[in-house]
Image (cartoon, rainbow over all chains, first blue to last red; front, side):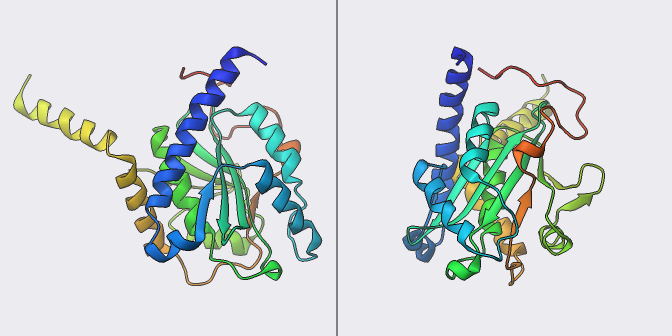
Length: 174
Length: 70
């Protein structure tokens, strides 16, 4: 592994963790007792395998392999594992565009509701994404490839604009 | 340098170097204010990294840089 990769991984890991710490500080008092926003660990990847047991899961991603490949390619990536009462409720991954002008949300999945009640995760994912985007001084956030119209419209309700070319939604950061 | 220019630079710096906790608070408030009551049951977005072309990057004309910014 190249020394430049190792340095970048360490440097951006610090940025990710400090962005997630500030993100947790923004939680309400009641949320602070039950929610944790962390980087994606082996424990989180192991917990995600429980999602395979549910028939209503919309995607068949193997997060263990996805994360491993993504981590190798993108040291500047955005990543978050969201926990509620020590139960994994969401995983998300993204990366800056090559020019660094935008931060993309490449993969996001919430735990199937059959596995238990959970908070609505997208508010938390998008807020966390924006914080990291501002740390990187990106000027735009993109949500790549919404899986269907319902999900796309849901993102649009936060003020994101859909662009068919590229199949993503975006929002400029002021 | 005129006083106006100095003020502009100070304003820009203040905005850029806002404390991270303040940035987080504002981002959370922004999304809370816009969050619809109901989230779709099966929320997911994206495409497996194994289905993406190596250098896919929409609307960007730059090639990937080796881990820059160091």
